[in-house]
Length: 125
Image (cartoon, rainbow, N blue to C red):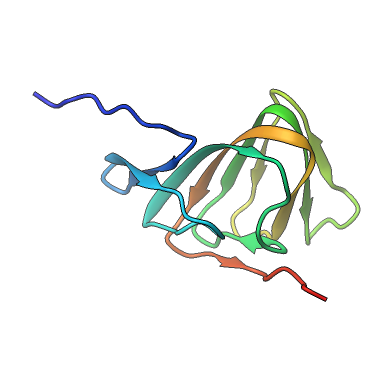
């Protein structure tokens, strides 16, 4: 009989593979690793993402704020940023360049498609 697995989401992301199996993966610094499937992350954001925008060509991404407040901006609609607070969710369409910025420290969930994706490096002037 299969055994239940306890996961510390403060330390791990959850990979949902194409066969719908789920496995925890230890988080590493920097942009997330991508898998052929979906990655679920539940974490606290205290500063902006470690990139200057990202894009997911394999599917839509879901962003949900549990607590705190973030700004989501997209290249296709400059100046029309979304402010997400507790209980708010948005869907970033496949192929949309977007960035998440912290307004208040936030507890946050993302469901991100893979295996492909790009991110822009942070400008270090």
